[in-house]
Amino acid sequence: MDKQLSRRRFLAGSLLTTAAASITALPAFGQANSPNEKLGVMVMGCGGRGGDHIKAMLADPRTVVLYVCDPDTKRAAAWGEKIKAQQGIDPKVIIDMREALSDKNLDVVTCASVNHWHTLCGIWALQAGKHVFLEKPISSSIHEGKAITAAAKKYGKICQVGTQRRSFTAHIEAVDFVKKGGIGDVKLARGICYKRRKSIGPLGKYPLPPTVDYDFWCGPRPNDPPTRPTFHYDWHWQREYGNGEIGNNGPHFCDLARWYLGLERFPDQVYAYGGRIGYDIERKDPDYVDAGNTPNTHVSVFGFGDKTVVMECRGLESPKLNGVDFGTIIYGSEGFLTATDKTCIVFDNNGNETKRFTGGGDNFKEFVDSVENNDPVSVKADARCGALSAAMCHLGNIAYYVGESDKQPAAEIEKRIPESHQVVFQNTMAHLEKNGIDTKKSLLSLGPVLKLNPEKEEFVGNDAANSMFSRGYRDGFVVPDPDKV
Image (cartoon, rainbow, N blue to C red):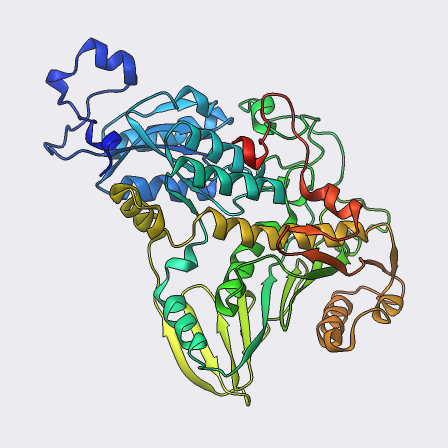
């Protein structure tokens, strides 16, 4: 345990002084008759995943939740009551995380807020000497991935990203199996996210929830009035705030692809195609305009020399591919492997199962282990790891957006798809047709093949694409350049 942690003492209720109370604004610690020191935690973001963070911190006897932070005061207060009932200590409910960063009893900040807050939360916490656990994507842009990586390196604190499959025994054993030649020579991985996403409602002007501090919720992003009917979660499908499905679940599956194929760098090239289509059919209104503006059909192809990663996102009804609708498929010369949540199955080239790996893990526990030991090296998914996996998703979005102005019928797009990638394209078109979409008339986007310099981590000869590496920031919420963190 580092020096900062060893200085903390939890005082019994009868010994709690007025001075100590004024510093922490919390009741006495150590009321469970335990002399052990505990790590003080703040959880930022009290939605569904934030609840998982809170439950994990409450379940670990080494941690105590001192703060809950959310711009929706109703959600934060509700969790505050639950935390008090379970741990016997009333956490402080706050909107602005900076209120807590000077508290010497605070050691850990975990963040499960909206995507555009992840990096800034992490940088502020690291600058204040706190350890951080950041949900995926660790960044909402490539610029942010570089910034958080630099901050983690500079301040030497634990910085872990929530790609929890890195901790699952099924994947640890399966990766070892693949790297030892278990399915032969491996050159291709396909990330699969076939998850039905219905329309988020018509584009319009909508009132804010009365309990939300909207200016702080927006943080780095524009504080324009909401144009979606459901305030929470549906921000994912508006590019001003979210990163679409590829940025929502794609980091998990791109991370698995990188891990299994041993890819620790930016790709050499990327292109993407797709569109936000089918909601006029769903709503039975040819003039319907959905409030979302990220693609619900999105295929991104990444070239890494002789290796290829394909990331497929489908928001319309779709059958599974080789039994997978939420995972990654690794293809080798002697078979293939399906990598899902806590199960990895090996098949031969005839589709017969030959081996199976199962088992989960606890990345929250591993994070606390690393904090307790003050050992950044022990983190299985550190800032750089999270930034690389998120970068693939950002590159896939950029490749799509660069080509968005050039929409064409599928028949025209097909002519521009490389022969070796036709199978994925044809399967995507068949999928759309099964959902009632006329691919001969419906317009899709296909961007150009974008070349990258993996060492400089930038596009070559495309200023428009490079301009999308950063998203711009409002005053007071600027994510600094990597050399200024």
